[in-house]
Image (cartoon, rainbow, N blue to C red; front, side, top):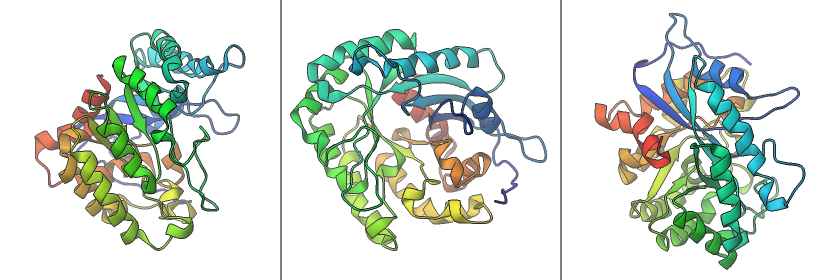
Length: 329
C-alpha cells in the first residue's frame, strides 16, 4: 500500500490524543516505540504534529492469568502504568491517562475492581470502558465483552454504573449506532457520571448498512442531539480508519489523503461539534486500529482541515482542552 506524504498542517497546536491502545504481539506490537513513532512522525521538512499527551483505552492487554476473574483486567492497568511512567522520561508523547475495563454487571461488587485499578494506576487511572457493541447481523461482530443487545438497560449493569459514578470515574461508551438510545437513557439517569462516547457513536457502514450511509448518519443525529442536552457527555471524533464504517480505506492500493478524509467525514463531524460544542468534543486517533486505513500524520491533518473554520479557542478545545477536561489530565 502506498502511503500519503503530506506536509504537517498547523504543527504548533497542542494535541492530547485521547484514544489509543497498547499491546504486546509477536508480529504486530504497539508499545512505546510504535506509539512514539506515530505521534512523532515527521514530514519532509522535519515538522511533526505536536502530540504532547495521550490516553490509553482498554484492549484486553496483559490481563492476569490467575486469581479472581473480575480482578484479572487490573493486569492491563499495571502494564500500561509502567509504560506511562517510562514515557515521562522519553522524548515524545506522555501517556497521561488510563481507561481500563471492569465488568459493570458485578453491580456493587465492581467497587473492589475499580479500587484495584486506581491503586495500580498510581494517579493515572481515569475510568473504564465496558464495550456494549452488539449486532445480530452476519459479519458485524459483538464486542470482546460479549454483551447482550440491551446491556446498558440491565439492572446489574446500572448498579455497577452507579458505583463508577460515586467513585468519580468516567465511562467510555462504545456501541453501534442502533444502540444509541440506550445510552441516552443511561446517561440521562446518571447526570453526575462523565460519559465519553467513542468513535462518533459507531455509525455502521458494513453488512446491511453498506451503501446506506446517509440513512445511517441521519439515524445517528436524533440520539446525538439528545445526548448533547446532557452536559456530562463528551464526544470522541474519530474511528475514521475502521473497516466498520464502510469506507474501505484498508482495501485501497493508495492510502487516503487528508483532503479525502476531510471531504468524506467533515460535514458529519462538524454537525457533532456544532451540536455538542467544541468544549465537549475531542479528536482521537484510535491507533493502531485506525492504522489499517489511515496514516497518523494524515489523520491529524484531516482533523485540522475539518476544524479549520473554528476559532483558535475552539480548536484548542477540540485538539486538547476537551480531552484534558474529560480525563483530568
